[in-house]
Figure (cartoon, rainbow, N blue to C red):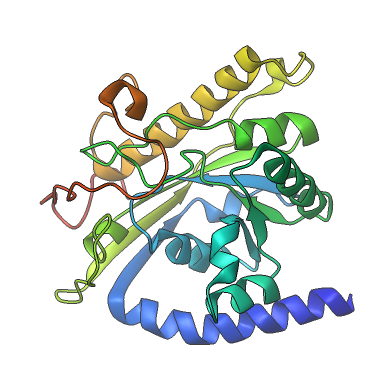
Length: 259
């Protein structure tokens, strides 16, 4: 209980700094958060800009859920940011196999405590030129099948208008609106009792990405691609920063389907 009170105090301090800034930068519409599972679950957002973890975290915090991310271990070495990540008990994840396994073990502890663990199934900012969710990595699927925890796709759209993908400056005026939608849990029941082979992990990951893409499509008022973007098929790495500039989109601020 003492540890939980300490975490809530840290989150309260961080929220006191971040929320006023977020309220200045953007208006927010949150959809479906009243139907989140009461017990521990895995939240899987799409990744289009470097500020969307703050947007998604804001939505969860306002529902009384403390957002715990699988976070690149290199960020824990950044002054101030690393201290904030450690104080809020975020989960460091390494690209190395052994480090990744340890991170999933810590994430399992978070789920067992009834909390939410947030995993970006794409593993990095999307490479898709149209900013749809790209081909996923298997970390979220592996954790879901290991623990039995539900997977809830968290679709969002609009944060990239405040800070474009790989952008370096914020677009403050006019004020943007961001939509965040918590969708229904992904059906993985038929896979949970099967051996955790690469085929099973790929099937689970494909379902997560498909459900996430459908949620993003509802916010954008568009049909997602039949197949997610595969960086390898286009000569791209799946992680790290891209050298190409993001092509800005000029959709209306209010995407269709966000009633």
